[in-house]
Image (cartoon, rainbow, N blue to C red; front, side, top):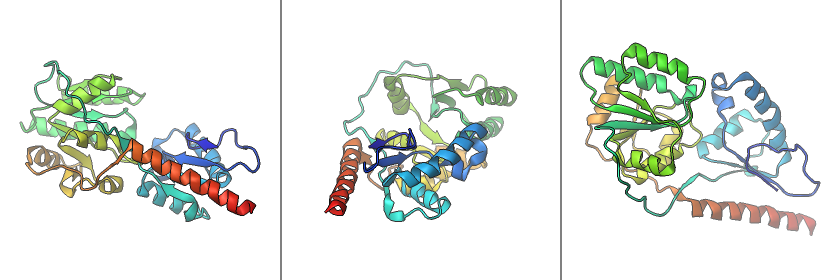
Length: 276
């Protein structure tokens, strides 16, 4: 049985049946303050029990695996595998782009606190006040309950005409926004992987991310990662002419499928050996 939703539910599966679970989100281990208390309690209750139940666990990055092992004492490292997320192998199709925006940076992320829109807006506001920022900030994704607080911040900084939130949009629209952006920004405080970084790299975009271990693992060069608390670093990154290619080749979704198949076969072969 494969459990893709990072928990075994129902908690018991048939005796003697081998199982595999993918663990996507470990934020409750590293930044519990950003996880609602009810969800935090659920995770603490269900995750540990699920980890003991399944035969093997797949994490989406080496960073996620190391974090899991450091918090789950007694978890056998041999039972934890890493399979990164992937990208669509076909080349992105160039799409016509209505001229709504002249110059803009793009941030595709739900407005959860750990996505750190707040520091991005603070940095942009500081640069605008100094006459050093000429870009709109285009956002997409879910507007959470935290969005109302961000709207007040935008208003207080005088950025109402500069920040645009398009909400949920089609994949075609996402591709348009990637392709025509001056840069794609990722100020997040925590990521288990960072799939949009891979997506942005497919367009050859300038990527300006926060300094996170998982971004290093993805192959972002050091100059592509900044401290968003320091507006000057954002300004320098925007004006930089350095190259922004990933130093590591990401996996395709076909690669991901092959790696899962190998893990499943290993589990089944081990089961046959034990039976003999």
